[in-house]
Image 1 (cartoon, rainbow, N blue to C red):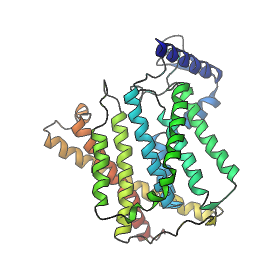
Image 2 (cartoon, helix red, strand yellow; image 1 turned 60 degrees about the vertical axis):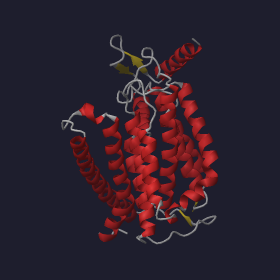
Image 3 (cartoon, rainbow, N blue to C red; image 1 turned 30 degrees about the horizontal axis):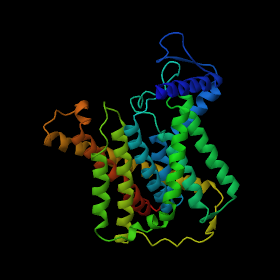
Image 4 (cartoon, rainbow, N blue to C red; image 1 turned 90 degrees about the vertical axis):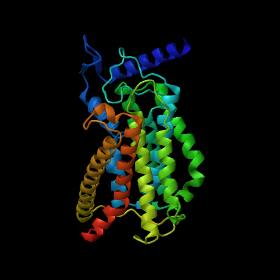
Length: 354
């Protein structure tokens, strides 16, 4: 009863926040329709919500790797994977429902079947922004207040967007931020170890593949199907691929050893037209190769699995089976991670973009 009352109170708080931002339920079929009375807030928070979704990670993280600092991007990926896995697992263990609709208007439908506590959008935004801030403090010279302000604004916008879109309660968001803060504090002493993983033994790749795969395959069983397990496998596999890609680069000496971090390595260079064009060119080339690899590996892995388990091709329900969903997602996005960290830089070098 106490949990029910708390859920109702949080739903009312979310509905009140939506009304103040100019989002009202329509008089009929409020779960499917809504009336927008303040388009500034609507587009601001819809855009902010996208900053915590796959479209942001598949663009920002590779762009950071190819154009800014590869070792910084790997640290971001590793913390992102850790935070997201714990957050996703916590959802399916706690099984706290999302806000009730009505009174809340839910603007996103894909993840509506997932549980609410904690908000993984809030966790990811907090992890990315503050890991970036902490990791760049001893590598680049810039005003700390500016970096802190950007981190707070970024994470706050994503957190508020989860209330505006009706996908989380206030408690979900606060829980996500708090869990992430604790994880960052606990793992910070080991961040230097993360930076040296590429110098591990030849057996390291075996652990990088087996351990994440087992974590995904033994993901907590839900009462009904939701995209949580698939999304978690995608994230963990991408992290495994990135880690394996860095190991390949170091073991086969495909890239030179990075300069050890100093108190201040360099100033942030001014953005020029030539630098912008070069960065966008590298990004477009890399994304095209990643999309090509993703499609090829996904189709091939699905064909093999469908044939192995004697499943009719193009059966969408079959894709949701544990023995098919986890292996094809894991193989696909591990390949994407390796491609992004190893083959894309090789292509850049071949095209004279480095």
